[in-house]
Image (tube, rainbow, N blue to C red; front, side):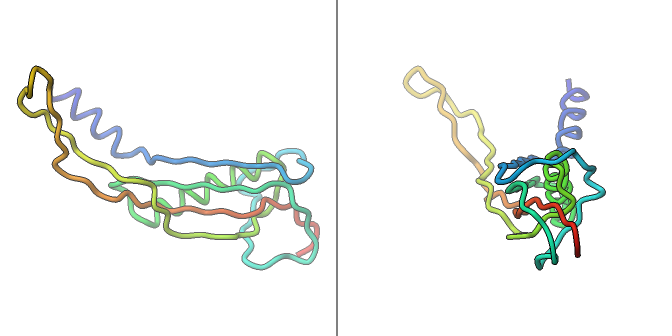
Length: 138
């Protein structure tokens, strides 16, 4: 019984909780690849807006850098789907993504099982948001 539980715990330890979105605000183009998508902190000379993109990642056992890398990777994937070759950054950094707790089974109370939380932590992660753009001149 311990072996399957240990395998499940180890499998979950490598999985980040992620979410990503893209909202069209312009005309989509033919898809690109995430490797073609460049991050911009200042607007390039000539570009057109395609979509608003955002992504975040959280995990209790991953480094902050690994979470940031995952967020960037997911945002680039969303931008590539709509044909962007760049993301003009709005924000990049920490994100508050809720809390996690460990519940324990307590003794029956009045015929029902009572559960109690023995520990909670605020779950923080990394996030990125910006505009997916098509750059024609840097």
